[in-house]
Amino acid sequence: MAFSSSSRSVMLPLWVRRGAIARRSGPARRLRWPAVFCARPGNALDGAVVSCEDDAVSARAETTSPVMDMVDLTPVEPGAGVPPWRDPRWLAEAVAWIDERLGAVGLRRSSIPALRGRMWSVVARVPVGAHGTVWFKANPPGSAFEPGLIAALGQWAPGMVPPVLAVDTERAWMLASDAGSRLHEVLDRDPDPAHLIPVLQRYARLQRDLSTRTGELLALGVPDLRPTTLPERLETLLADQALLAAIGETRSEALHGFLPKLRERCALLDAFGIAASLDHNDLHPNNVFGSGDSGLVFDWGDASIGHPFSTLLVVLRAARAHFGAADLSRLRAAYLEPWLGDGYRLAELERAADLAIRIAPISRATTWRRVFPCFAGVEESNASVARWLVHLLASDPLGEFELA
Image (cartoon, rainbow, N blue to C red; front, side, top):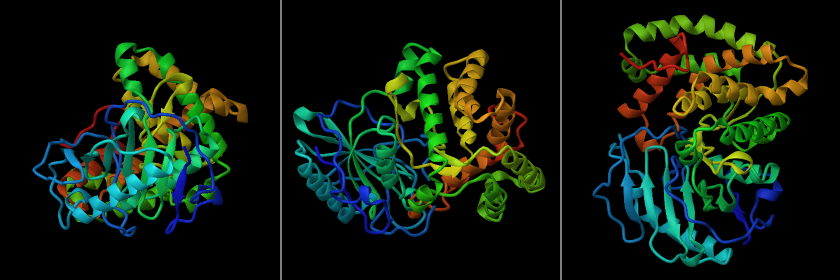
């Protein structure tokens, strides 16, 4: 099967563009619904506002289409405008693109795609007969970089991400091969850290390698959330009156008062000299296909350029569902191990990781601004931003710390 790409609004390296590279081939395998994917309406790339963890309530809505089966739609109503799944023209264009790209790699759709829609994502399961399943994904403006990023990662680290059949960087669309079951299913059956540790270490080595490619990653549109940018990011968020109402007066005042401490922590973290890199920003077992040395990390729509250790906020919070304190410490040390080769002692890396985890909630909060424009400012989005920001005030950022 040949990989194809179109690049009209986001400049990509030559090898990402249409017809510039051949991709791995082979039949797709059967896959369940991924945990999180993303979508965007129309052709607009302006107005970045989130992909995020899948805690929104989903429901089959009364939306119908002759070209896609609406199997799972969020009940959250947009503030203004319509989401992609209510736009017949968008749906027709998406199906036409799917069919065109399938034909280019020698596949043919065998029945109607099944669509799943969220504030931050649309994904469609596309049956291709005896070849199984492929997946269509579209991203909102705030994560429109993802198709180009996945194509780049497929070249830089081909064993780290699922095989991609086609990308359209103007419309932020992607078509990917099925990649099997997810890591959380493996851990549910056998909660052994050995299933996760190789994934974390491969991912950590990728981060170290990509620290020399931050310019290329920024050119792809990956947001800049390096520690030095975070105090300004927090100030911008705290200027949003609707968000302040979601946070509450007492905690809003506490967050304003936290700004000097945040600046201090960011400066201390920066002083360790650990190079910024790509942070997946939502790395948990639901976003990994397979396990161990063959695990593939997907759903990069929350990614940013930041301190690499910020990854541990989500990694360790999610890992608590499967592991106790001793295993969590083992996971943390295994993730940090690749940086020992840069001359750091483990104790130094542990201190840097603690600082990175304590400021990482800002990065997580900003991802909730990457929703479709029609969902910008809705109550559910502000509530999710608020839930992450209050973790900045927690004595243990890995613990539960909800709004009052």
